[in-house]
Image 1: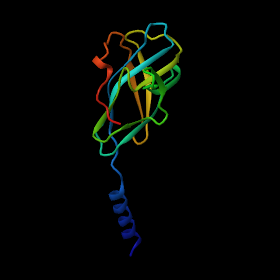
Image 2 (image 1 turned 90 degrees about the horizontal axis):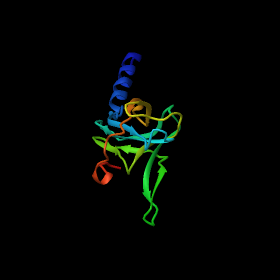
Image 3 (image 1 turned 45 degrees about the vertical axis):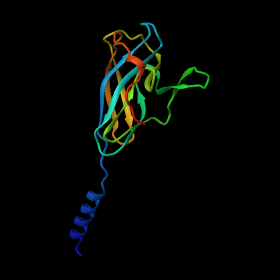
Length: 156
């Protein structure tokens, strides 16, 4: 078999073996603070994956705060809800979505360098296992009301 034929066979085999990729979009993002001088803030959105393969949001980065983390609320067993970091990130299922919502999973900014005002924007880099890094300018919206029940459909 010639080198050219072997090369073509290798390329054909590789193209068949290549995995499908996650196709991520970040929809309706917004950030908010409790008051203009607050040192912490949260960001909320729906992350959709229109691809054929699950992806995972591994981390978030932003220069506006000393630390930017993925967080959730979890009941401690005595009826108290505690906010905690989710170090393993969130799965964004193939053909599905994962909501980052008030009272649930969310992005947390801790140690804001300056206060955030309505209409400001916060640059955030989302780091996905397969889709890589996606940078989003998230608007600060202090007027948005929480959804009733503070939950939104999201898959794990």
